Length: 158
Ligand SMILES: CC(C)(COP(=O)(O)OP(=O)(O)OC[C@H]1O[C@@H](n2cnc3c(N)ncnc32)[C@H](O)[C@@H]1OP(=O)(O)O)[C@@H](O)C(=O)NCCC(=O)NCCS
Image (cartoon, rainbow, N blue to C red; front, side, top):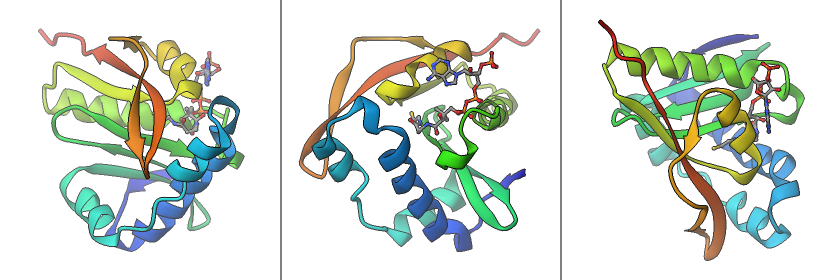
């Protein structure tokens, strides 16, 4: 298993793994309507490629198969961190997050912020993040999907 920067050629595989991860890993915390809307988003190639070219998108790969990815934007927002079901619970989420934290430090970002899925709140707390407000919903494909705003303040470098 290795972690590398995504290339435009990874766009479709990232999308499929992302949607599949929602279906398999988030279903215990969301209604079937929410999961269907959220994981039913169509592949937007231009958008995926733009994020790969403009932001930090890392993939977790085994034998050329993408088993995880993370998307971190320049303003410090962790936009996505998703693993394939087969890669859950083996430390890969934390490894990807460490790479994001290194990137935040390289750019002297004061904090990393994100909207956590309801199922991942414990993971982020475990990794030093704290909620910054109550849970709220975002509209995806005409369905309201719950999430919790969280952040991690980066250590000040002396
Ligand atoms: C959230 C996710 C990325 C975590 O990745 P992971 O590889 O399963 O987590 P790790 O194995 O790296 O766990 C790191 C630590 O967090 C803990 N942890 C993981 N998930 C946890 C949870 N839901 N609640 C509490 N602790 C959790 C682990 O026990 C581990 O602790 P340890 O180091 O003391 O043993 C992964 O479960 C996932 O892809 N979930 C579905 C997609 C999703 O909801 N992503 C979040 C989008 S905001």
